[in-house]
Figure 1 (cartoon, rainbow, N blue to C red):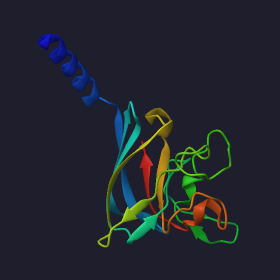
Figure 2 (figure 1 turned 60 degrees about the vertical axis):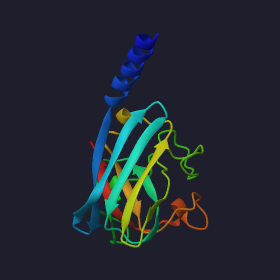
Figure 3 (figure 1 turned 90 degrees about the vertical axis):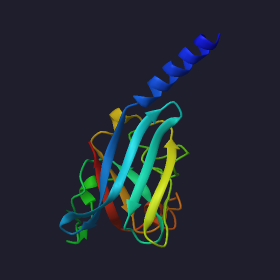
Length: 173
């Protein structure tokens, strides 16, 4: 019996070590595009959902909106008024079902909605969380965007949760 349990343990352990994962390097943004690397986000498919492991250093203290965006770009985009939108070429929040609803990571809105990131007084973020309903295959050729402010997971009083400008970005390859 001990041999059977030990074998089952080894098989379970071996399967979990080889889970598919990808790392996205995260950079601060400027009008020129990506600038200084501030860390990374590792995404791993697990039985519990997509595991996000965030390790950042160098963003302003406080809450920051965090989303998967539809395009694999961190380049700026000029709006109709001629102003540059940092990481504007990342596009909108990833929303393959076209819900057009910003409801937060655990409701039936954008699939790109992720939990808030909270930077400590030194500008560090080290956190892990699971996001159900995502696969690495669908995350390929998307981007991760961090916003200047928090996110209330509503479109009122401000659109997209009120996070404001995009301050950091990384492409998911």
